[in-house]
Image (cartoon, rainbow, N blue to C red; front, side):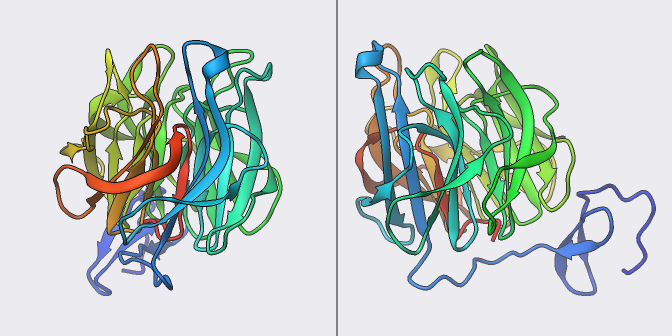
Length: 353
């Protein structure tokens, strides 16, 4: 297995029959793909930061810098963690086993509309966030994020002032602090995206091309640099869904579908390419949700909050979960400390670790 054919593309996945391990090629060598949950003392923690929800007028927009947290392996209501450095709906979030980053987001009705701000927290503790640096360009309204223990990648965004849908992909080394740098480009500008993945492959799903929603799923190879590649299609077009993952499977749920806000959940096998398969539905007891926060511990996938249909866009405090390895509808987990949406989630136990 040591000979590398010259035709092997970066990001290729194989099963090594000598070691009985899945491997990914980074352009130079093959790397093993982890397929088990990390050993986390006390269980993995999911953290949700910020909030921004439209209302019938700017006066009743729901805006917040609240950070909540849950212990994913148990069920129950969220607990206050601290505050972000800025009141905003977070564009996207990702984490290593120790540090969670909250990236960009919407700050309407502020004249700037969106922000490039990145904050970080230490997930195992509680307290207010600290400034980390800035994205390469401001934006929000759904930034796909994917991370492993070393690197966090952000893809897509809408700057809103001036209105501009971006194909940007940028990244940072999580243990450092400072501004993001260029990674590559999406095949088209998009926002309303969601992302997850394993340690090697990042998944970028669906989104809003302004104004068309799409069902496209793309992927990148996180340890390298480069443009996104086609993965397949979701079973539904959506903007503002939430994605969770184990090391092998990615689930995409919720978001706004053409004409309504949906509760559908799809899944894909990360190491392969191809179209998604229907998994089930989010819990409909509190209505439908767009821009929920989403976290996982490789066993459970959790969706929290989000907002409902026009014209009120009512924010939700509902939390529900599924078991990632099975198929079926989500069940009740508990409630957030307040109704929230565009409050991106991250955990210290997701499929990239």
